[in-house]
Image (tube, rainbow, N blue to C red):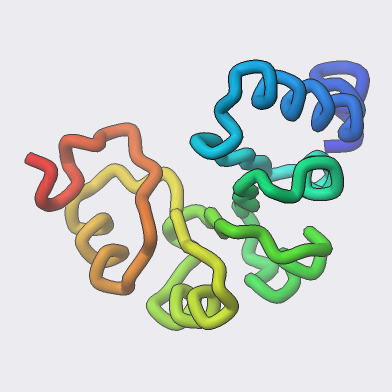
Length: 134
C-alpha cells in the first residue's frame, strides 16, 4: 500500500531488491514463491528476477481480468481468497496457464469443493484437514 511506503515497508523497488537479495543469498530461487497483495513490489520482482515464481494475492471483488491487468504481467500463480473463486474462475485461469492457489481455506468441505474444481494448491492454517492428508 502506498501509504505504508517508508513507514511499515520500504518503497516497492527497495523492498523487491531486499527480497531478491535474500533469495539469491540463500540459493532458494527454485524453491520460493514471492507473493503479495500489493502488485507494485511484484512488478519490481518480475522486472529484476523474472525467473522467480510470483503469486498475486487477491482479496477484492474486482475480478480476474481487472486484477491481472492491474498487475501488468501474467503471474505463474493467482491466489484469491477462496470465497472469490468458482469452477469457472479456475478454468479461465488454467486456460491462461496460471495456477490457482486460494487462501485461507480452513474447513474440509470447502477444501473438497476447491479440489473438485481443480485448484493447484490450498493455503490453510490446518493442513491436517486437507482431504487425503489425514
